[in-house]
Amino acid sequence: MAFRQGNRYQVSMFPPTIEEYIAEDDPVRVYDAFVEALDMEELGIKTEEDKVGNPSYEPRAMLKLLVYGYSYGWRSSRKIERALYHNLSFIWLTGGLRPDHKTIANYRRNNKGAIKKVLKQCVRLCIDLDLIEGNTLFVDGSKIRANASINQTWTHERCEKKLKKIDERIEEIIKDCEQADEEEKGNGTLIKLAEELKDKDVLKKRVKAILGKIKEQEKSHINSTDVDCIKVKGRQGTHAGYNAQIVADEKNGLIVNSEVVNKSNDMNQFTRQVEQANEVIGKRCEVACADAGYSDTNDLKETAEQGIKVIVPSQRQALHQPSEEDPFGKDKFRYDEQSNQYICPKGKELRHSHYSKVKGHDLYRIKEPSNCIDCEHFGRCTNNKRGRAIIRLRNEETKEQLEALYVSSQGQAVYKKRKEKVELPFGHIKRNLGAGAFLLRGIHGVNAEMALLSTCFNISRMITIVGMSKLMAKLYEHSIKVKIKL
Image (cartoon, rainbow, N blue to C red; front, side, top):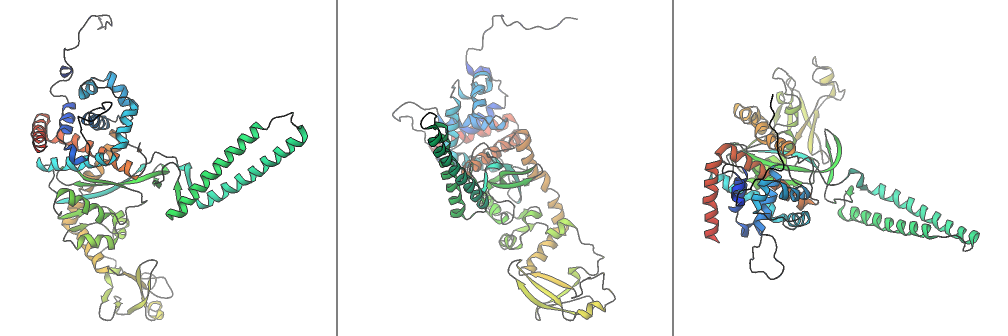
C-alpha cells in the first residue's frame, strides 16, 4: 500500500499577504473583530499615536493577543511569544508583530484595570445581540489557586518560632567566630560564617516585616508571596488561593459579572454580586438564585427587600429536606408574636430564654421540663431532660418566606437550572482553558485575569449561539459606532 510522504525540500510559496494566511471562517477573525469593537478610551487605554520616544506596540494588538491566547489556554507570556513565530493565527492576528514575552507580561500587568472592564463591554454587546435578558440571574463561587505556595503562609506563632530559631543560630555563629579567632589566630577564614550571619540578619528582617503586616492588617495568617490570597479548601486539599464569584444569565448562560474575593466562603456575597450584575445590565433582575453556601438570611434580606425573588435553600433544606410527616418539626410549632413564645403541638408553652450574640439567634425553651419528660412523645420530640428548645433568628419571618419560595414549583423550576447555567462556566474555565490557578498576583491582578477568562467564555458561547457570519457582521457594525464616537 502506498503512503503519503512529505518533502521538506519541496519549493513552495506562502500567500503574498498575511491576510491570506487565515480562512474567512476561522474563529480568530471573531476575536480580532471583538477587540476592534471595544471602546479603548472607556477601558482607560491610551492610544496616542504622536507620542514622543521609542514606538510601542499598538495597544489593540496586545489586547488581541491576550484575549485570543486565553481563549485557547495560552496564558503564559512565553507560550504566546513562541506562538507569534510558529502559529499562523497568532501571526495573522498581530499582522506580523512579534513582541517578546516580557513586553506581553508588562502589558498585562500594567493594564489590569482596563482588562477588568473588557467583560463589561462584552456584556453590553451581548445585550445588543439579545443574548442576555437579565431577568433571572444565577450566582456561584469556586476556589482557584493563587500563584503562591501554601508553604509561604505565615501565622503569628510561626513568625515567633522562626525568629527564636534565627536568634539562637545567630548566637551560635557569633560563638563559633569567637572560638575560631582564639584557636586559629588568623590561620583560618571566617568568610563562610560571616556570610551565614548576614543571611540570617536578612531573614530576620524579612520575618519581622511579615509579622508586622499580620498585626497591621489584623489577619490570622498572611502569604509572603501573595499577601492578598488566603487558605482555601478544595477536593485536592488546602492551598493558597482565591474565591472566584460569577453571575450568569438564564437565557444563554453567559457571564454577566465576575469578581474574585479573598474570602474562604460565599457568605455575605449574594447581595454584592447581584447588585454588581444589575449595574452592568442596567436594570434590576426579577429572580436571583444561588446554592446553600449563600444562605445568610441577613444578606438575602437586602436583595429580597428590593423586590427581587430570592431562590436560595437554607442549610437545613440543603442537608436534609424535612419530612412533611414529622409532627415535631419546627414548622409544627406555632409562634405567638404578641406573647413572644412558641406553642408546641400538645399546647405547651416555650418561653424566650435568651439571645445569643455569638450565634445571632433567640432561644426558646419549654416552661416546665416535666411537661416534656411526662409527655408521651418524649424521646421522639426531644431527648433533653431540660425539655424541648427552639431557636429563632431575628429575621425568622424572612427565612420562612425564602424557604417557602424555594420549595414552591417556581422555585424548584428555577433552581434546577442553576448547575447548567452557572457551574458550566467554571468547568469551561478550569478544564478547557486550563485555568486551575491564576498567573497574576494580588487582588487586582486576579480580578483582571478572571474578567479576561469570563470574556473568553462569553465569546466562545457567542460563536456557538449566533454563528460566525452573523456575529462578525454585528461586531463590524459595533466597531463603526465606536470609531464614529471617537
